[in-house]
Amino acid sequence: MIRHLITGWSGRVARYCGLALTALLVLTSCTPAPEAPLRIAIHAWPGYETLHLAQQQSYFQPSRIRLTEMTNASQTSLALRNGTVEAGCLTLDEVLSLAQDGIDLRIVLVMDISDGADAVMARPGFTEPKTLRGKRIALENGAVGAIMLDALLETAKLKVSDVELVSATVDEHEKIYRSGKVDAVVTFEPVRSALLKQGAHVIFDSRKIPERIMDVLVVRNDKLNEHRQALKDIVAAHFRALEYQKQQPQEAAKILAPFLNVAAHEVIAQYDGLKVPSLEENRHFLSGAQPVLNSRAADLAGLMLRHRLLQRRANTAQLSTPEFLPWEK
Image (cartoon, rainbow, N blue to C red; front, side, top):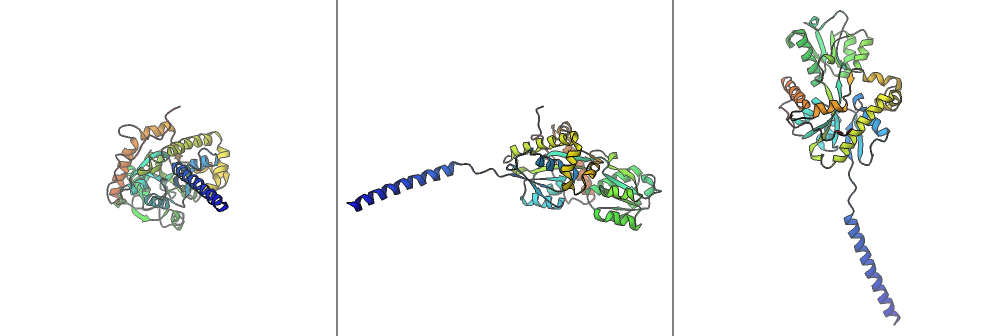
């Protein structure tokens, strides 16, 4: 009798446990998996720092958006290529280099435009571009160097054969100028400011070629739908941080100093020669049947092909989208 009671009780417990386990499995299967965050590759550059500012000011949810720190643009490009991040901050030419290899990307934000930050620095005595005929010019072997050189030579009515080009990476620019081996250097901040202190002067800069050199936020096209809300959030956070930076420049400088690896009082000077487009300007670049940015990218792709910086023409017809820009006041 006792054995029968114990057996019956054990059976009921087993049934109840089985039912509970089944219910738990059903509930677990119905609970949606946590949304994976949008990973954005970012490296130190003044034009990108609105994203760090937005992060520090809690303008977006860290569970939805994650800034992935990189040391340089090459790492960002590799991460986008391999799919270890969904988005990244790059120059337009770097985007085109990925696009030529079939990496389908969409530009969702123009972050900054060079407006004097890129410059040709010449020795005293060279007063205008045409005086560089027959002289040695150092530059980095990349699209920005090619853009600046093309514009310089066009202004001076010179051909490439009229000057002697010396290949030098940006970290070598200051040293090669000090050595006296070159007469001019095609460079950008912070080397531009360093060369000014050594007596060089600006003979030509990116103010003369507006909207030719720019940085953008780009996203893998196959991840747009998955991270649609996160993309809207980060673009809105960028403009919110930009407004904070305008209203509270000193406070913003304190926040950004560690990311730029400079003292707080040096942060504002880092933006000399950079233009950060407003929301309206972004709408101008990204909207319309034939977006202005796509046209700029096509022109740049042609220049890169001529300088053999691209092996084949990148598809620029659908490179940008305005759908993540805020449209309501």
